[in-house]
Image 1 (spheres, rainbow, N blue to C red):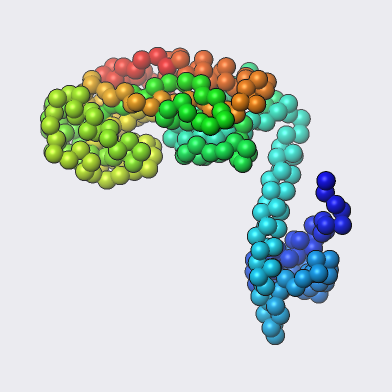
Image 2 (cartoon, rainbow, N blue to C red):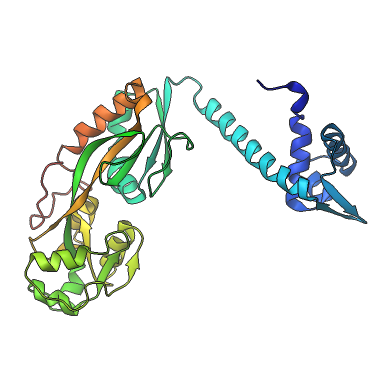
Length: 316
């Protein structure tokens, strides 16, 4: 139970945090639209209530003490959380609920967000907040209700629902294809291979599947996200091995061309992950039912154009 005697006023904490951040009472006063004497008085009140000195005062300078430095870190985090919670409370005014979702960046921007209008049509009073997480995390320590995960269906304390597999196809710009005279898989051994950093063995596996021997399948520039690989391929920097469902727009618009019918199905897959205690929470259940159904349907048409006939995709 919180004890009121141990909770300083927010005004005093704001004055302390601003002064600690700027290292200056005058700059803190300017930020808070207060006088310097008012800021100094609030800091003094805070120090009196704590019984410790938070600053060492030398002439016109203020320097955090060891205790002050520790306290400033916690105060800054607490004020940040309070600000976020306040904004969220305001944002939720008049809504039935909020879903905090952690997503993989390329999956979120290329696949999920374009389909979200359909979800909001069915649930107009729901707010979905998106955050980015690249690796599994502890739901108890993070402000998320669910997450999109790629890999194996293993996440401590959470349930994993399969969404779709990952089928990667070799692509490049039409200009790069003609310039490098790419006609058969063996021709790729002399091209620049665009690498995705979390799929380090993908090119080696693809070459093995088509019976082509290559000396070093790891050569070529590395990118952290598939969106960057797709952009690099469209810019004519080389050949990328990219999940088909992430580049439907580029294929339809002709910015990328699929080179060969052979694809590589990754050993991992995409999953919706959520903590076990929230499995039957109404909002989590609604989102789970919708995204699982949507993942099994055909891809969205790209900007009103039909999909590239040379690059068919299986239903997802």
